[in-house]
Image (cartoon, rainbow, N blue to C red; front, side, top):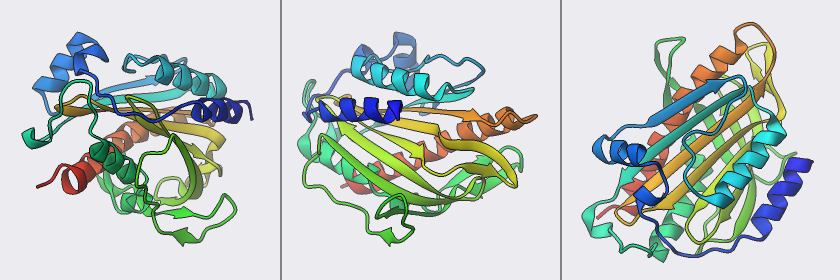
Length: 268
């Protein structure tokens, strides 16, 4: 309940805007150079007393994620950074996040149905595997009836939706998604409303999984940051299995989002 209250306060006082930030002003120089040079994900996986290492220099984002971390008290945390490079025709000047691009991105991250069928690499099986077999917006936490994805004519300051997602690892579950926007950032938090099981074993209790995805516009590119954290069941090997799964899933979500940017936003 405490985390929900913090979330409510945070989302209530945010207001949308349209500012872009130079990449070098929001991540460490070494990360900026690596992101610009290589089309690769920077990934950080931690077990036991994890600390934020890749988070961009955004005071509100850090305050929010720190509050979430304190609430969950995770034993597992995965962070990821990725730089999506826009086609030149879509570059914008410093300080200007094009309103059409921002709204388009927001509509893509609320398109929950498009997560169905995405693939990730399963290290335990040494093969590609479907992440979500079913994914869609539902009416509320007690409903399983799928609805169309929402559509927004402009980016709201805050929005909440519930989703049913059938995960081939953790089963058929309900999640809460909280979206927020401010002058220079859009992000959302995924929280499990139902407990997650790993096969027949209890894995993650209700509310003990949080994933935050943040999107910054950098004029010539889009910076995507992910922080996934969980307090897992104290069973032998469970933490290692879940952290490995989280790393692969973060890569899958980045692939999904950049694919949506390619096909729906930054396309000719």
